[in-house]
Length: 303
Image 1: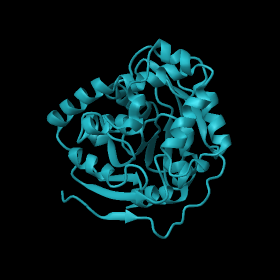
Image 2: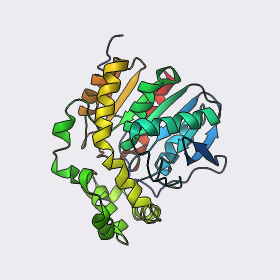
Image 3: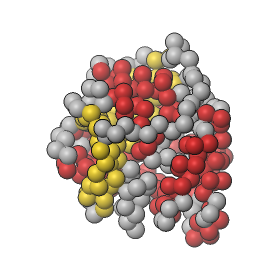
C-alpha cells in the first residue's frame, strides 16, 4: 500500500479553554469483564461498528468521554481501564504490553466484537500496537496519539530525554515518596508535558489524583513502566516475525509535544500512515484541545 504523508493541520479549529472533566453519559453502561486472568472495568455505549479506546498513564478511560460521545452516534464504543489502572483489578503481574493486548482481545471476545477500530494515547499506544500486530485481522483502523513505542524507531534516543526520567522511577522507596502525594506527582506530568497547564483544570487533577491514590494504583502504574525493557524486546520480535501493519493508521502528535515525530515512529511498523497535528496542544490532547482531537478521530474513522 502507498504510504500517506498528508499532514492534517487543524487550522480551522481554534483551541478553546478546556472544561472540567466530562463524565460519560448515562446511556453508557459499565461492565466488569474477566479476561486473561484479571478483571477490567469497561464502559460501553452507542451502536454500530466497534471502536476500542485505550488510555495511558496520568489518566484512565475517563479521558475519552467527550470523544466517546461523538463516536457513539455511529459506533459501539468500548473504553476499558487498563490492567492495574483506574477501576480495573490490580493483579501482581502481566504488565507487558504484549500480555495486555490479550486482555483487550478478551474484552472484545466477551462483547462478541470480532473486529474494531482502535484509538489510543500514551501507554495505550503500546498496548494498541501489541494488539494490532498480534491480531491484525481484528483491527480495521488505528488512531495512535502522542507517545513512542518501546524498541521502535529512535526509542533509545527518546528515552534519554530529561523529561522522561519517570520511565525508571519505581521501587518501594519511590512508592513511599509518592504515597499521600499522588497529586503532587501527577501535577508534574500535567504541568511539564502540556502546552498550557491551565487547560488541565482543578477538577480533572483532583479526579485522577483520587484514582491514583487508591491501594496499589501507583504501584501498578510503575509496573507499566517497569515492563518497557521487555516491551522493547517483544516489539522488535513482533515486527520481525509479523511484518508491518497494513491497516490505515492516523498518527497524531500535539504540536508542542511529539508533533510530526509520531508519524515517523509509526512508519517503522505500518505501511499506510497519515500524519496529523493537534494544534495548541502538548501531550494531554483530550484536555488541551478536545474539539480538534475528536474531529480528527471521527473524520478518520468515517473514511
